[in-house]
Length: 192
Image 1 (cartoon, helix red, strand yellow):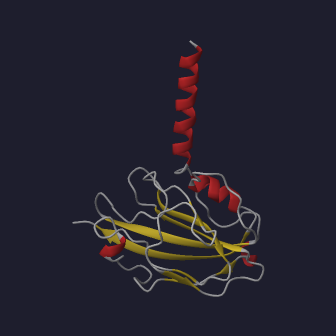
Image 2: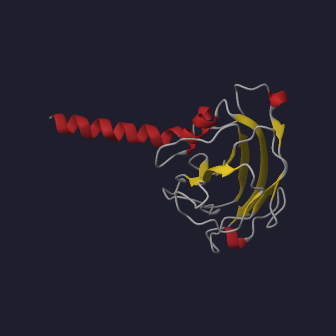
């Protein structure tokens, strides 16, 4: 009997965890603990596509599924690390997370193309679990229609100490109270 209760409880915990990603409280809209006037806008660009344009095939599930190259401008004073979240708000089941990457050193000004899909990179950069259940970047792969894909960069006043298998909800929670600046780049993709 106690095994059945434990099994039911475990399933409820798992369902709660999966459902949290799509709830409004887990959608990072800036740091609620900082006045909007103090959060500095950071320019975020890619040599692969421009704001609002089509993401090239090579960065999608129909191509090589490489992470795109990203470059950013000057970071706010006091920045200790950078985090990036990439997601698709147009997915049928709710926001689909494509990439979680954090503890990018503040001295960096870019992420090169095709970042390895491993949890910890040589320079201490960490990657979390996307909505496919894998580590690292997973490219656009919409079932139908044109979807928007956001790459959101956050300058943080700390290095984040996070557990294994980090989800978007955990990363967003850890960033609260630490965001000094943010930038965004949106690309589109559709499948025929």
